[in-house]
Amino acid sequence: MKKFKQILDLIRKTGDRFIFEDDQGNSFVVLSTEEYESLLIEKSKVKDLSQEELLNKINQDIAFWQASKEKESLPETWDELEEKIQAADSDIIETQYYFEPTEEDD
Figure 1 (tube, rainbow, N blue to C red):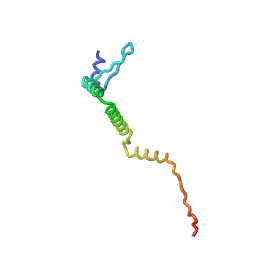
Figure 2: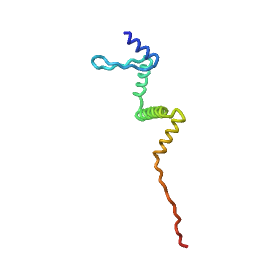
Figure 3: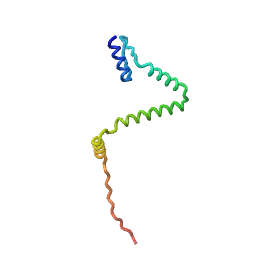
């Protein structure tokens, strides 16, 4: 029981969820009641959407997810940015063109 109280304290402090498995292999999730209610409300909102509304919501969620991933991949310092630029420059293969004058008939 002491371990369970420690887990609950961590959930309160971090806002995370905890997943555990019983002896039969069944998984359970421990989360705050506020988060659980939020999940139920969100689920009921999705249930009543039309196909177009649902697709728009999915696309919006994907856009938010991509934006958060792009934020994570941004360089934190100027040195990191310079390294990324140099790496990108080394990947570029430049094509060289030579121009020669043509002879024109008068």
